Length: 227
Image (tube, rainbow, N blue to C red; front, side, top):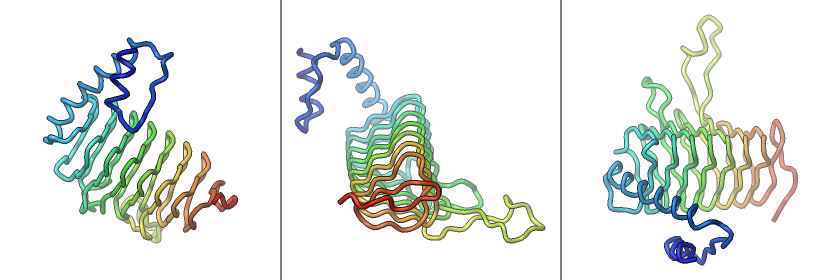
């Protein structure tokens, strides 16, 4: 029970650890976090409390701005190269095998991405920037396999391959505070989601949505008001 009490004090915020979890499991978790803390502070050159798995890949760390309690899990790939960089609030968690790539091509510097406080990204996510900016509000959580695409390929000229015609953005992507984005959701360029919204698993989202609604479907639509 000593390990349980110690971990509760470390986590703070009144969190209670289930007493059925073996102490050996919790000890392994604590040791892994300690390794991540030491590596994270060295890799990001900071005295802030950050946790980075040694298996994570981080490029252009000089364009990252972050507060304390940043967690980057195993096998993540972060490339912050962009005009405005990658800005991360306090208590941001980036799940296993998630990719954040803010510049998709060296021919066009990406706009960047800003993330509020207490945001959790699930596993296997794919978050881009490119021609469009991405903004995510505080206390928003993402399920597994979510992707955000804030740009579109140009395809007006049939005489040229689409890959050679460049990209354009219709405003990027903006997600409000306290939203829940379900598993395998795809969010496309030009999307603005209000505060306190839920996006159902598997939805393909484009367009503007008000506060407090449930969004779902392919293509997405408002299912109902929830607040």
